[in-house]
View (tube, rainbow, N blue to C red):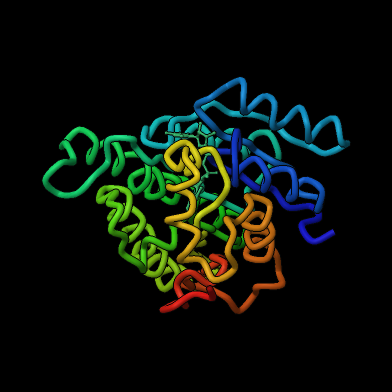
Amino acid sequence: MRLKDKVALITGAGSGIGFETAQLFAREGAAIVAVDINDDAGDACIAEINAAGGLASYVHADVARASDCENMIAAAESTYGKLDILFNNAGISHAADDDAVNTSEAVWDMTMAVNVKGVFLGCKYGIPALQRAGGGSVINTASFVAVLGAATPQLAYTASKGAVLAMSRELAVIHAQENIRVNALCPGPLRTELLMKYLNTEEKKRRRLVHIPMGRFGEAGEIAKAALYLASEESSFVTGSAFLVDGGITAAYVTPE
Ligand code: NAD
C-alpha cells in the first residue's frame, strides 16, 4: 500500500475529484478526514470508505472560514494523532462568472473566498500540523486555466486558479527544507458536475472537446491517481510543480481532426 499509516485531509471530498481521491487514498492505507459543506455528500463519502474496510471520518468545514479550517486540522490530529497529507481541493465555479465587464463584485469575492482564501487557510492551519508530523505533502487543486486563457470567460475562476498556482510555488520554496512538499495539481476539463452543469448541450461539449488532443474529457478518478502520486513517497523530489493532468490541452496548437 502506497499510503500505509498516513493521515490525509481532503477538502471537497463529497464530490468529483475529492470523492474519488478519498476512496483511492483509503484503499492505499491512509486514514481519511473528509471535509465538505455538503454533509450528506461527506457522509456518503466516508460511508463508502468504511464499508470497504477503510478508516474515515467526516468534518463539516467551509474552507472560506478561518475557524472552520482551524477546526478541521484540529479534528485530524485529535482523531488520528497527526496529519501527513493536506489536499486543498474544494473549489467553486459560479454560473454568473463572466468577463471583466459582466462579472459582479459579489461573484468575484465569493470565488476568491473559496478558491484562494480557502487554500491559504488550509495551509495556514495545516502546515503547522505537517511540521509537527515531521513533514508531509500539500496538494492544492488549481486548473489548466491557470496557464491558458479561454474565450468562454470565467474571469474570477481563472484568476483564482492562477493565484493557487503562484501560492503553491512560493509555499514549496518556503518549506522545501522542512520535508514539506507543495504542488499545484492542474486538471484539464473533466466530466464532473462542476463542468458538465455548464456544458449541457452537445454543441457546448463539442466546442470544448475540439481543443483536447485526446478528444475526451478527463475523469475524476484520473486526477485522483495523480494526487496519489503527489501524496506518496514516489514523488519525493517533486515540489513547486504545476502538475498538469489535462489530456494534452495545454500542449496543443492544432488538435487531430
Ligand atoms: P465538484 O463540484 O464535483 O466538487 C466540489 C466539492 O467541494 C463539493 O462536494 C462541494 O460541496 C465542496 N465545496 C464547495 N465549496 C466548499 C467550501 N466552501 N468548503 C468546503 N467544501 C466546499 O468539483 P470537482 O470537479 O471535483 O472540482 C474539485 C476541484 O478541481 C475544484 O477546485 C475545481 O476548481 C478543480 N477543477 C475542476 C475541473 C473540472 O473540469 N471539473 C477542472 C480543473 C480544476
